[in-house]
View 1: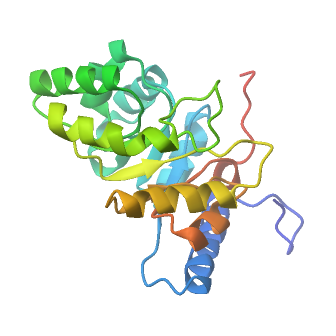
View 2 (view 1 turned 90 degrees about the vertical axis):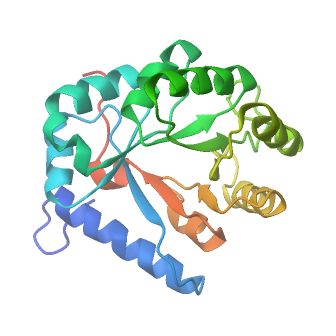
Length: 232
């Protein structure tokens, strides 16, 4: 992303302002009175960029891996951790449930009963339970985590009846090679059918579409931070 005034790359402050403006414009097009939350996806980003994002005023961050998040928010940014909201937006192994509950305010990737059981056990030990979202595999991709759409109602009932878990939202990651909008519409429909109010959907390439379809939070990484360096 280039600054048209001087042909220099935009700063993180400018990138964030641009994304927030686009969020507001998409909400206006959809005639929404609420503004979706911006989750800055900081996975694999260097701490310097995260520091710049914090200085720009960002308060909600998303991480994919418990261990990476522990190193960043439990060490580098430990003193400011109480002032931000941290969301786990990547897959969670049951043996990391206790660590995840200690660190995260929101876990968006509840996708199986075994994990629900581990979260409840860990929550009883630690004395708190993060807010939870159920990940839905809207594309029914075999390699991807998430509850199949046709199984969601039964899964939610079991979470309530057996574990006293009442997720506040649904999350999805559409297939890479398909248009995202039909998957967003499906998630919106499933939420309405199951009386769930929050929808985490939309990333850098499609968050405006997601907002027009009802996203209450969008997970934006590269549009905010710039391209990730996975070789670092």
